[in-house]
Amino acid sequence: MASSTRNLKVAIIGAGPGGLTLAAILRKLKIPHTIFELDASPSARIQGSMLDIHKGSGQLALEKAGLLDVFKRHMRVDATELYIRDHHGNVHIHHSEEGEEDPNRPEIDRAVLRRILLDAVEPETIQWGKKLVNVEVSATTEGKNSFVLVFADGTKSSEFDIVVGADGAWSRTRTLLRSSVPPSYVGITYLWTCIKDIDTRYPRLSEYVGKGSCFTLDSQCKNGMVCAQKNGDGTMKTFAFFPADENWKENSGIDWSKTESEFKSVLQDFVDKILPDWNDNVKDLIRECDEGEMAVRPLYRYPPGHKFEKQVSGVTLLGDAAHVIPPFAGVGVNLAMHDAYDLAQALEKVLVEGADIGAALNEYEGIMMERAGKNAELTAGNQEQFFGGGGLDKTVAFLKSVFGG
Ligand SMILES: Cc1cc2nc3c(=O)[nH]c(=O)nc-3n(C[C@H](O)[C@H](O)[C@H](O)COP(=O)(O)OP(=O)(O)OC[C@H]3O[C@@H](n4cnc5c(N)ncnc54)[C@H](O)[C@@H]3O)c2cc1C
Image (tube, rainbow, N blue to C red; front, top):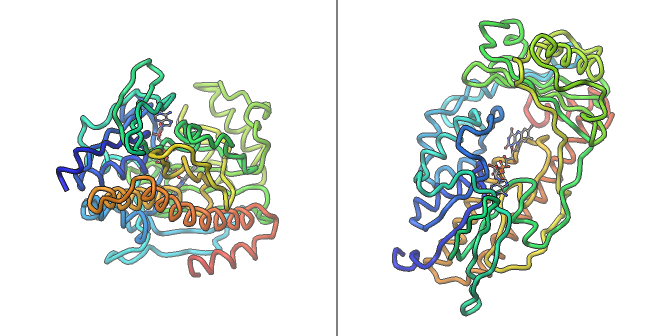
């Protein structure tokens, strides 16, 4: 394989979980690759909360990258504990943690997973501070394109045979496939908050959430859902999802720029507007947020059945760049990692069996988009359960069928 791999150079745009997983697998397969990431450094961005990494997808990709053992050393089986509560705080479902032996969906902090993946990638294969703005076809030989990447800082990088857009929901690579339709707003926005040292500083809130995740639902299942997660480093991260117009933040009348002593009043304004009659633990998960550790973001998706129009052979996508969905089934990272696994298999076919690049990528994209379509449907169904107004009993019965009593 080594001699043929010298002829195939892969550019990966984006060092999110999808792009890094692909790079880790390609390193194992000895396929030359370079990652280009717009962030200036690995620490430029605060990482999100916890992720459950599924056996048949995320774990499959980690195994292919030779990282399953290191993942298992860092996974958090205790964090699979789950509470479903109503907005008064009453418990409707308590799902105990999974068995230690071989858990299906162990949790891991996103920051820890990222560190595992970064450690698995040769440092010199990642170029930080490289925002892709364009991809040009420099030459076509025997039907095979060669690409030049153009970056926002004016630099270029050339002689790539394959370009993989792992650059998230607002993928620049995707627009180069001439699929100019942007993702659409799903009608739900969220506020994200963060409290460090939760066990020491707020034991009452720690107990409310338990060792893993706690979902608090409103009684109509229409006005909001608050998901709090205790991360492995003792930080509580809370996501308050609520129906709103796309520009809610700008039009909310809340002055989000307030800092220091006035910061708490911003959070109180949010609670008064969105969660006025919710129990105090939920309110405090928002109100006690550490200063500045907060963000408001609308959610976007491509609907089930969406396809991207492909114009350039040798350019492909994975993860959110191809099929962003809101997080109501908690599968986005697992899908991105599964895509990386399938794409690596396709590239192996090109190298080992001499398969045609275009045909191998088409086959990969067919598998990826079929899986993405099913998960987009699942996610839309879950969104309807949480926000469709069907009432708490119906949603709790649904969740019992998913998680057990
Ligand atoms: C609130 C919330 C909670 C979630 N919870 C879960 C969960 O519990 N489980 C789960 O599986 N999924 C979850 N998800 C979904 C998950 O975060 C995404 O599906 C996942 O991060 C997608 O990975 P990715 O690598 O495809 O893209 P991303 O994580 O978006 O990474 C894309 C990377 O590309 C870089 N980039 C972007 N544009 C460019 C450019 N032009 N040039 C160079 N680099 C670029 C970005 O900086 C970024 O590093 C959640 C999402 C949200 C919003």
